[in-house]
Length: 183
Ligand code: SF4
Ligand code: SF4
Image (cartoon, rainbow, N blue to C red; front, side):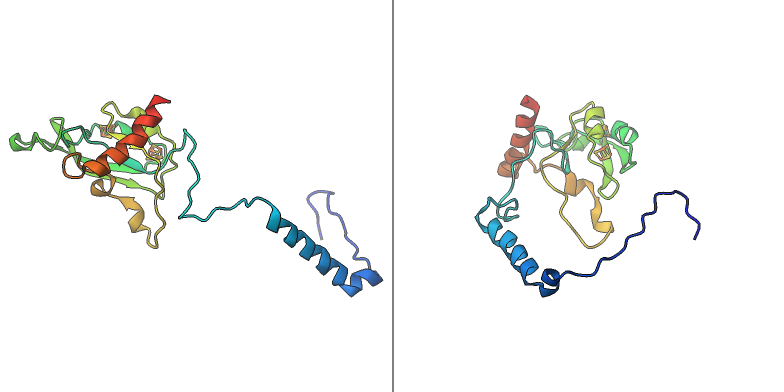
């Protein structure tokens, strides 16, 4: 058979020695290695009951931010989508109406905002591109799922909890963010 390189090495299998044919020494050696690990510090943890601390530079699931009054920060400028190297972000902008000042901080807002988590590489460029502090990467994993469609996160799934309707949830989401920014 033709070979592209001369690095092919022909291996010849030697006949088993008497000790090798007994198999027991090899089994005992393997068992000894297994038992020695019982007394060593475990490399694994009982996730999800136990969690490892995140690195300060960890970048997880995106969160769309609200201000202290609960208004959405995003103004649908599209800079995050342009900055995204994976083309994971899609959005549709809309004009804020007169009676919607309590919902949206800017005159324009994202009527639709989606991130495809199967495309996202969690690089954080969307966060860096945003001029409105409207998107950031949290310390949360994108949970596993069974369908591709379920990995397309809608605006409702990405929005931070409302600071007045769910203060506890809002504070919890903000704390990790604020601590991260301090570093
Ligand atoms: S983290 Fe990176 S890949 Fe993911 S949506 Fe933001 S810019 Fe795109
Ligand atoms: S998240 Fe930020 S960068 Fe992206 S559309 Fe909204 S305001 Fe613009």
